[in-house]
Image 1 (cartoon, rainbow, N blue to C red):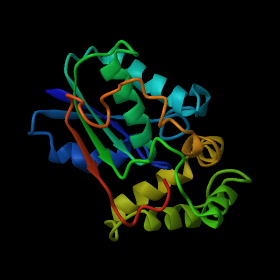
Image 2 (cartoon, one colour):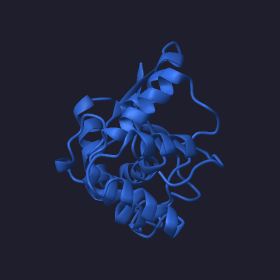
Image 3 (cartoon, rainbow, N blue to C red):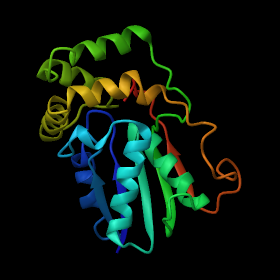
Image 4 (cartoon, rainbow, N blue to C red):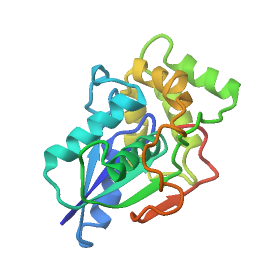
Length: 208
């Protein structure tokens, strides 16, 4: 089976892809979720800059030994996935075998536009420690197009609650504002990349 390495959104974890993993189990794809630093089971000490997150992902892919693989990125994970894909196609990271990239409401390589009041509110949620259940639910509800099933909603809220406050803050104050638009080394990334790319956008996305 071809592994598809999946990078989650802000406040989520590899569990974000659990339903999709079960749905695609017969399609010759093995979805492998990677917890980005400070989320899920990954400690924030691994590093919370876009560069540090990209290196963590590259190491995980390299350690897998996969000769062919797919990269999936959602929101925050989409920005990291784009950087990893560009560095793979240019040969900068020493990886090979990338066959496709799927971006789901990906954060842009340029600084992500976000309403100042919204950013300040989200930062306040983690100012004094872990995010509360109420704020976590508010965040989940603002970033889903329709009401989640109770079990999925509970899992998503719990993911936000267990997010490392430092990692949450780092993305909002630095990672989402990092400008990678001119840093990609693959000159064909906008027009002639041989790797198929699919981008899916949702109007309910409010900064993740």
